[in-house]
Image 1 (cartoon, chains in turn brown, blue):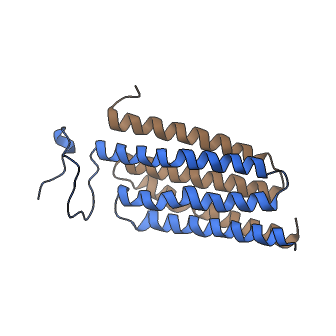
Image 2 (cartoon, rainbow over the protein chains, first blue to last red; image 1 turned 90 degrees about the vertical axis):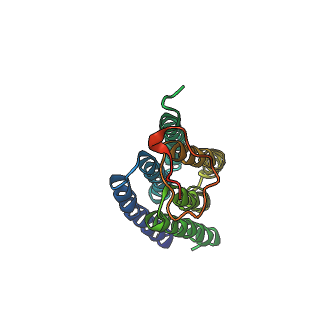
Image 3 (cartoon, rainbow over the protein chains, first blue to last red; image 1 turned 180 degrees about the vertical axis):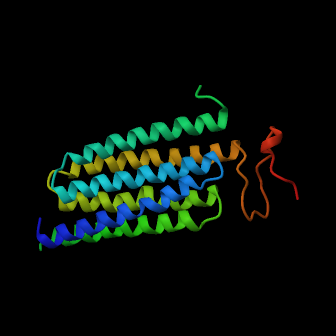
Length: 91
Length: 115
């Protein structure tokens, strides 16, 4: 990977990390539990993007596997909390 | 600077641009139901652009990025629907709604106010 591509990937990484701050602010200032759940869902989505861009910057391909695991766990967590909010229990 | 690196950088910045748009929508939309529109953009288009850029820029990342993209397009709409159902059933009010076609909820704390 050339030098310019590496610099571009680092700029993308910095922009994605800066984007985490409004989501944290939205999570802290939420008025309902569903808003907080939604902010955490967007936060983990951005974290998957950060992990993938970090794999590009470092040049290590198996860091994308961590993104797959993070997507699976965030889906399970979101679904569990959403079921808890809507039906009062997991089962 | 090869051609596939140029295309990869373009796809990467496409995805980052959609992530910025989604987070700005997350800040500016008034309630949960409209913010789901913005966060859905980040989880499909934004991450697809980033994954396409990673598949073009990084050797050996294509099958993993393809697996992650297929998993995301199967899973994120289910998560968005679960968030909307949780918000509706726990009684989060809609902002600026002219009419609500859903029937009112049974629990007295969660009933939306009638006009």
